[in-house]
Each structure stands twice: as structure tokens, then as C-alpha cells.
Length: 304
Image: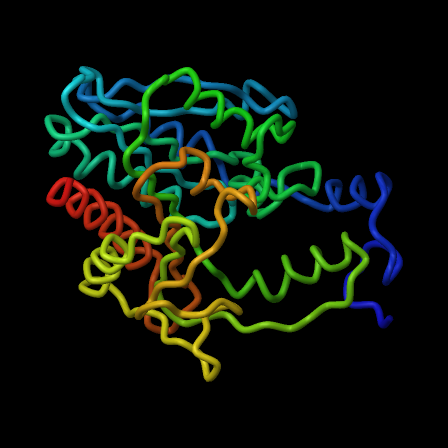
């Protein structure tokens, strides 16, 4: 097997030494405190900001924060918004924060909202999909997981003690998936690198076991007013999965340990924007995430 990644021996899974080498090659590229925690500090008293955990690599630097409506109501459903499960996916984090600052208060009488804007703060600072242990948190939402980012969010939900009706998980698909993450993943697992393609545009991922096509379609329609929707490729697919309707594919959320499956909510979706598109900007991607959240919540409120 030809070498396609600088770490490890091609064809051999990484051991602890290779994982340590990968970790030591990472560096801080932006500030979680300045770009996330400071924005939470700026929220008004409509919402309660609280800590639900911390990353052991540096608990002071990486507190895990959530926001919920300050006055919970027993007669309205619960909704969860998550961002930054993959820390490098910027618009998921900033989209969740922008929704909180600009729109969330308008839902307070109709929904009990919980927002975890940056599930993986070390990944946010170092612009990484993995956590410090070379593990993808978005494949780790499984019973008894020891992955801190995933276990902490699961603990937040257990402490909440409420059934969540809708969960919207905000993500990006970037060119770096193909240039950095997929080569690292194949090298880590001792596999041959299989090249792929990055879709140009927004799409959502529904749950194969609970697809909710009308809900997904409402999100696509809302986002289409902000940015373009990813077309299917020549095989009728997006990133190797069949397109079930324009801009929508499906995964087995719970089976794959995806964040979107952690609540087993009736309405779930994973959003995916494409920040490297020539038709997009960082501001457009953030606006698309906000549009997705609003369209999803509005659909649920109108149809439940």
C-alpha cells in the first residue's frame, strides 16, 4: 500500500504511539473562550446558561456549556439544538449561537429549548473532527460510551429528565473532509484510502428508522431561501447515500452512534452546509444553519 498519510505504517492500524504523534501535531488555531463562551456571556436573562461538564484535557479551558429557557413550561414540548459535535465545523457552532442571540426568545412560550452550541471545544480550537484521542465524537453516542464529549451530552439529557420532541444537529461538509479527515481515518484504521466527492450545497441527513420526510422537506425549503441545495450525483446519491428527496439522505442514527440519534426524538435531522462552495460565505453558512433551525421548529409547532 502506498503512503498517503505521514503518520503510521500504511496498512497497519495506529497504536498509542501513532495516536500520540497525531495529537502532538495539532495546535490551537482559535479561541473557544473568545468565540463561544463570550457570546454566551452576552445572552440576556431569557435563558439560563449552565455548565454540564468539562474536558479532562483542560477543564478550565474547556467547560461544556448549555443554554435553556429560564422558565420551563410543562405544557410545551422540548427541543434540542446541538452544534460543534465536530469542532471544526464552524457554522454549526456559530449558527447555534446566532439562533440563540437573534431568534430563540421568540420560541420561549411555545417550546422548552436546550442548546449545546459547542459539544467539542478542543476540536473547535484546534479545528478538528476528532477529539484528542483520535476518536470521532459523532460515532460515539452509544450506551456506556467513555468518549467525554458524547458521554457529557448524554448526561445532560439524562439530568434533564424530559422527552425531547425535536433534535436538530448542526454540521458542515468541507473540502478538508477529503484532504485531511478521510486520509487520517483510513491511516488510523490501516485501510486503503478511497477517494470521494464533496457535495456543493446544503443537505440534511434523516434517520433511516424514522425519516420524517415532511420535516426534512420543510428544512430544505427554509434553507433554499438562503443558499443552494446540494444536487444528487450521477448515481442519485450524496456522499455515497441515496437521495430520498431533493437535498435529503438518511443514516442509521442510533446504530452508527450519531448525535442525532441520542434523544430518540420523533423529529431529528443533521444539517450539512458546504462552506468551501464558490457560492457560499461564512455568513451565508451561518444564516443557513439558523434558517434550518427555524424551519424545523416551525414545522414541528405547526404539525404536532
